[in-house]
Image (tube, rainbow, N blue to C red; front, side):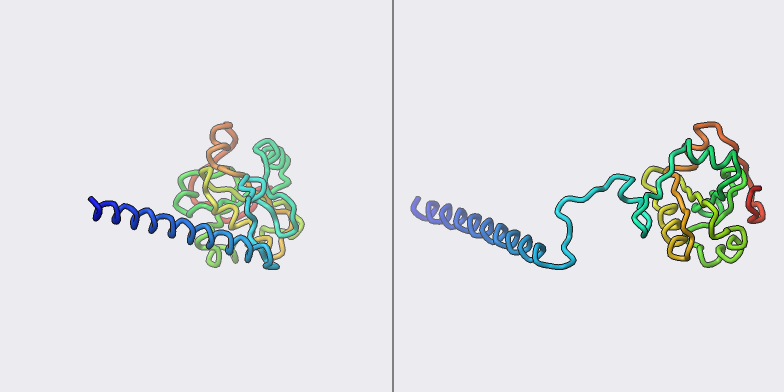
Length: 175
C-alpha cells in the first residue's frame, strides 16, 4: 500500500512538473515574440479577402458579377491557372492557359497578350485551390498591377451558365 502511494505521488509530481514546463515555455515564447521586430500575429485573419491581397495592399478578390461584367465588356484577360489537361476539358471562353506549375514554359506564349495596364483575372477550381492566387502573385511580382482572383472560378462560372469552351486553343486573348 505504501509503495502504491509513493508511485501515485511520483506520477502526480511528474504531471505537475511537465505542466509547469509547458506553461513556462509558452510564457517565454510569447514574451520573445512580443519583443521581436518581425513578431508573429497571435490572431490571424484567414478570410479570403485577407489571403488575396496584392503586395500594394489592395484586394485581389473579384466577385463573379464583377468578372462577368469585365468579360462581357472585353475589358479583362482571363488566365486559367489549372493544368493544361484541365484547361482542354473546359475553360472560360477566351481564357488563356497559364498553368501555375508550368509558369516558365507557358508565360512566354501568353506574355504578348498581357498588356501592362490590362485587367487580368486568374482562376482555378475549388474553394481551397491556391493556383490562381499564386499565379496572381507572380504576375504582380512581374510588374502587372491590375490582377484579380476569381475564387473557385471554374465552378462558379459553370454554375452561372456563363460562356465556356473546351480544347487547347492558341493562347490568344479574347477581343
